[in-house]
Image 1 (cartoon, rainbow, N blue to C red):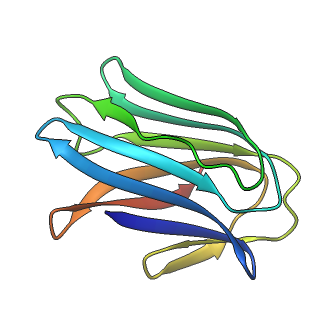
Image 2 (cartoon, rainbow, N blue to C red):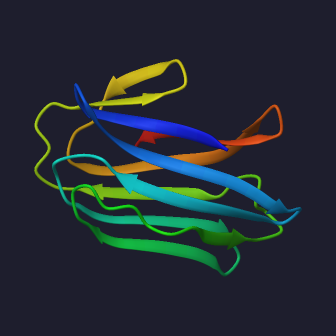
Length: 121
């Protein structure tokens, strides 16, 4: 399982836990460890495979949800955030500013473990 942290403030973050149970599925869980409500996180695995996490209150952790698709190696994720003031996004060694708006991430594999890489639209 790989956790990726969006550092919004010094001690708060958005954690994605991913695990691969089968060849064509990934299970994803989100923990909102921020003091802010996340409006929506939408993950699409291609074809008809989609997950939408709606209204994640501060401190809330979702259950695992499955994305399955023949194209599972490159599912897309869009994160909709409101009211953020100058936070940061951290993904592996990549650090860039996170501002209100849409963010796209790719679920990739590093040493056979799922990892999430973020880019700003």
